[in-house]
Amino acid sequence: MSRGIEPGEAALPFELPNANQSVGSSNLTLSDVITEHGAVVMFTCNHCPYVVGSEERIEQIATKAKAAGIGFVGINSNDPVMYQSDDWSHMVTRADTMSYPYLHDETQQVATSWGAERTPEFYLLNNGGIITYRGRLDDSPQNPNAATTSELSDAIDALLTGTTPAVSRTESIGCSVKWKV
Image (cartoon, rainbow, N blue to C red):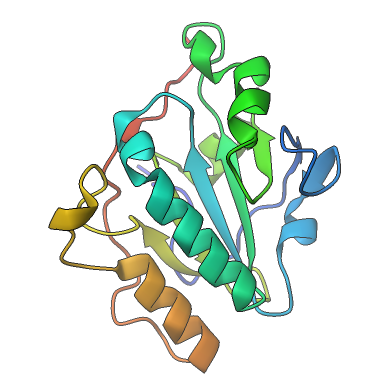
């Protein structure tokens, strides 16, 4: 069974509405997100305790990416009917706390084609749209004090130096994407 796009493979294009109108236009494409240095695409949501526990560190990694000229975007693919806290209006409210675009994958086509499994789950792309890292932020999404790794940050450092990350794939730790039934 395919697990979606993996390191070494090309990211798949998308165009999605942006709930964070203070950052970016009303609709964004993958091409809008990728810069001359690359991009981080994060599958996320509003309610997952792993996302909530990582919010400060997600903001820190978004700041690091932007300071390095790397694009950063969050995508919410959760079913907004069964999980109303993930609907558009709640996304707009949550976006007030984000420094990056927050896109809505209402049809779940992007999450399905990319193979997103959890929230949060990160994909680091080079400037050609090739995945160089996929997985978790670190090994302790709910408790920053217990983190002993920094895989995404390390992968960003490798991207910036033109090297391959020491670890290019980890299993995400978080809630499952809430699929429509």
